[in-house]
Image 1 (cartoon, one colour):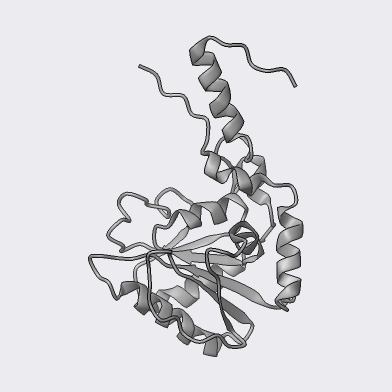
Image 2 (cartoon, helix red, strand yellow):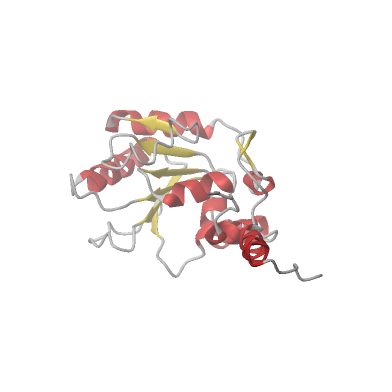
Length: 210
């Protein structure tokens, strides 16, 4: 009879007040100076067109030749198993063992199709470019929701990234519950506590005192 919105506890980690420090430490450790623009590609399987993620990745790799200040981080989905292109001065890999929130906060742009990693990026203040012809775009229309710059042509990827990079980037911008200046809900880091409060309320139990 009721729906109560609490937030998703899986995103609570994005509210860590130390996240900007971790992101800065990551950029420093990997030699990403202020002049380096970090583009993270979060891929995912596409059953309707299995080669689509590889074509997007190929377009991003090709764009590096014209943008020497760009660094591309390839972050494959855990179920997207394939032979990653080799690392280079402009290309690196990120896996499940890596600190994803820090990577997202350290990135200047996140590129994806419909991965929830994109939502996490936006919540920490990292702008997103999305491929809007995924089989799942209708279920997760980031650009239609105003959360990304959407493209439908591989040739538009690099220009969209360039335009997105012109926007002011503030690490942790989304932690106050704002995304691109729009209220998106309670501040991050409180969802688990809100869920617990709702459970106690439904059971008629008093909330514990601090």
